[in-house]
Length: 82
Image (cartoon, rainbow, N blue to C red):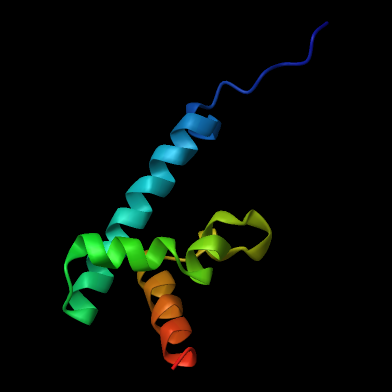
């Protein structure tokens, strides 16, 4: 008997990437509001950040936290770079 393949579509890598992309967009919008900058600029800054790298790294567990928390982490990262 062959092992059963997961039939949960939410576990699909494609679906996971869509979910992550949606989350990053929401985080960028929140950052744009807080920083009073254009959303595209906020997205660029976020993608270049250590916070974004940590969000993609499952070992950090950051992906388990809400978007507002991740936005807070990004703001703290930027404040610490000053």
